[in-house]
Amino acid sequence: MSGQIHIDVFLTLDGVGQGPGGPDEDRDGGFPFGGWQAPYADAATGARIMRGIESMDALLLGRRTYDIFAGYWPQHAENPIGRIFNALPKYVATHRDAPLAWAHSTRLGDDVPAAVAALRDRHREVHVVGSLDFAQTLLREGLFDRLNLWTYPVVLGVGKRLFPEGVTPVALTPAEEPLVAENGTVFASYAPAGRPRTGTIDDG
Image 1 (tube, rainbow, N blue to C red):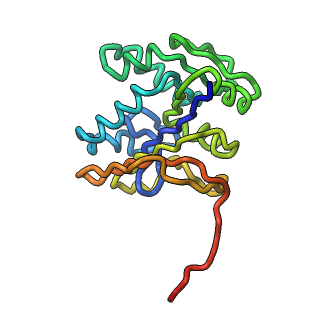
Image 2: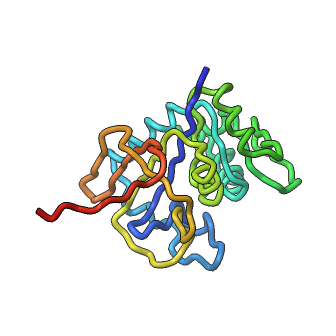
């Protein structure tokens, strides 16, 4: 069995992925725009997001996102997303000793790259949702098979970014047909394609 690791991130046009779901989701650093994704919800994006959720058979999360989800989804078990998330195995990258209270949760070992790589032998499709710092670790280690980006037509100017200064360079190639919603939201899925290449554009 050789499963895949998918990284799913909701982003603004300037690359901010912090607190898309609600005002109090992540106020770290005094972030003032929590819930910026909500005004762009529509049927087309909702259906595609749900398709991705229904395809996963495990969640892989950084500790901050895990704590956010663990504080929300167990109280929303009637929600279709909540039903799936609550039932899935959940793997958490964390150095903290605080218990993982959400059902079916497991702490990754100290060798996080090895533990993540081993998940490919255990699961068909593991999804990393949000978890920006952890996603950067996976990008740096080359431990992903799909980078699924939802880009929304809004610029915030502040907040945590998926691609900050110093992020590991990587080339990508399209993995499926993009989706462009009427409100300007764009979904694009990419597979890794090695190191970036350079060249000179022919002017004539």
